[in-house]
Image (tube, rainbow, N blue to C red):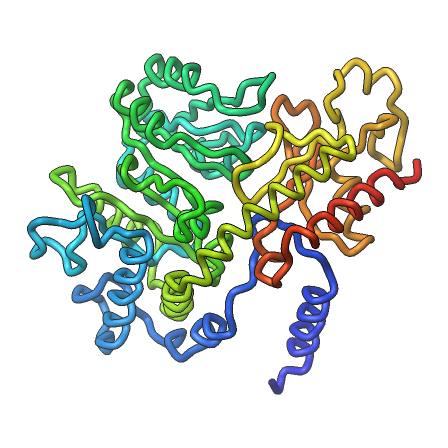
Length: 427
């Protein structure tokens, strides 16, 4: 590279990534082949529109690329077989009852496109509250998704910190949202997709599943699939799926023609030309995820997370929801299972942040762990009383380090190091 300033920064980031333990639940390492595709000549091509219906010439090869990416996505999630196969195959090129749009630039864009295509402006979108594990794009008030549509939020049970489906059903029946969003950014336990289907039916709502965090685990048959129950499924491609950054929207092909409305919302509704080099990188990752080794990887991700959660619990840390069924572990470092009054009564100062004896704000935990070479993110926890910028906990994830080959014994050592760092914080 002739631009030495940029090369220096690239080299510095490579060095940083290699020198740390990466426990960011939403990060991973895509393959060299994906990176090669991501930096390919496909980046030179403008391709507004869809295969066979572009607004520019010269898209013969791009059309092949996008159709191949769609085909691989359909195959990876088993939507080309069994109950998912379209009896009248002339309706779509992939002979599936599912259509997939591979053009969204990000997960938030994908979710926004679904709402724009399927929910009238001002109608209700029901998703999990941010503090319970929901995402900003699930109709949170600070997001455009919660400004254009009316947000209805559900929370986890305050005692168990897991979903109370009866409560969610009663709320849905009362509020009558246009769309119910299942799938989360910080909820570690297994989700009952079938129950969410029942809830949506009772409320007369569409069921949208955001499987961004779970896509790789679902593809690897290590976590239940939402496809038998959802109307629409969105996902990013760079988390457990281990591809480059991007997103996809799956939608059922039936008389409602949801997929046509969503396609129009993506383009021309929200985006211009798709990033075809990004789509090329995603296509590579989708093929890689069909390998038998990926199934072993997905299972190992969950094994590692369970060990991490268990080892932290043994050392006295409050693991939210009493464990995990996925790739992530939430730790309430501030309350740590205690009452607010007990922490408040003996809180003191750590710089500008309140620090209880035995209670550590998530921001402090994140900073101190990073000093020790462990990268994670501060995170809100159920019943959060603190600011999102200085919340009560941290979120830990196992995908990236599992990609690097780490197994249960390694995560026991990681848990030990986390415990040592956090208990050694000087006040």
